[in-house]
Amino acid sequence: MKLSPSVSIEHTETGLEFINIESDLCDAKIFLQGGQITQFTPKGKQPLIWVSGNETFSEGMSIRGGIPICWPWFGTHANAGWPAHGFARTSLWQADEVNETEECITVSLKLPMKLVNTEYWPHQSALKVEFVLSDSLEVRLTTTNLDDTAFSYTQALHTYFPTSDITNTHVDGLQGAQYIEFAEGPFTQQAVVGFERETDMVYTQAAPIQYINTPEGVIKVGRANSSSCVLWNPWIEKSKRLSNFADDEYKTMLCLEAANVLDDAVTLAPQQSHTLVTSIEWA
Ligand SMILES: O=P(O)(O)OC[C@H]1O[C@@H](O)[C@H](O)[C@@H](O)[C@@H]1O
Image (cartoon, rainbow, N blue to C red; front, side):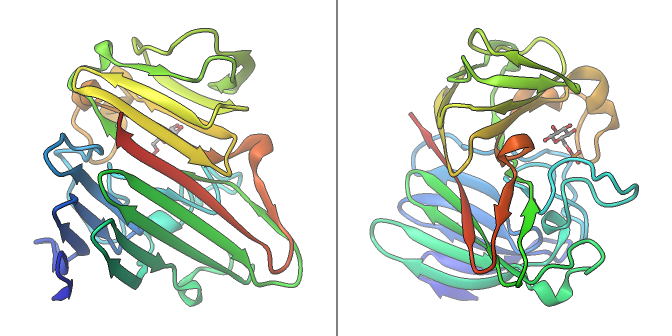
């Protein structure tokens, strides 16, 4: 079904619905499950986000790649058995608006709060994600407190980036930030970050722009309303334990995630909103 000249609704063979964009500006796919973008390729350029070749696009399972939305908690929850990275990434979102101009295409989705398990999230709230697509991608995740008491949450836009060679990939712009690694720290990041082992760092007080240097070119990654970010590569042993992930795929991806975690967690008073933003482009 066509929504605008370059935007249509399509389905995978497994029945998952996605918004397909094929325009003069870029090609992209946005899944209603998870509100998750899984492809973004500016016209005439290399893809800017990565999805596993082993991804099965199964109902209710998080998609390994793209930009999973981790909300309203990042990582594992203190309550045993609660879903890792929250429930938003496996929930079915609803298309809200599509707008196409010569400059950009905007797609927004909402998470229907009526369907959320109130044990996980007892607060009255609204959650919306907007994708602004041109030769760059901006993702804006807005939480609004509709309750009469304050609540706090953590979150991340968990972007998977492609590289043809992780050992020849570096992240510039984290120097000077503090990081926690495997529950130890904080340490101060001294140099540009390379990859030669499992990497799972949570950075705080991080600058708003990083550059990922890959053999294919330099990816500029920006954040707004976020002073924390996460850098992840599972490396050899963890790759074998991940769902929908081939053993050697750690060589061709990394995650740099715009976040609000640790002392950057968000607290919203009644009627307040917060928008976490990430932006991605070839530099
Ligand atoms: O396998 P999941 O739940 O998608 O998580 C992937 C990774 O996500 C990262 O953000 C975490 O820092 C890692 O610890 C975690 O392994």
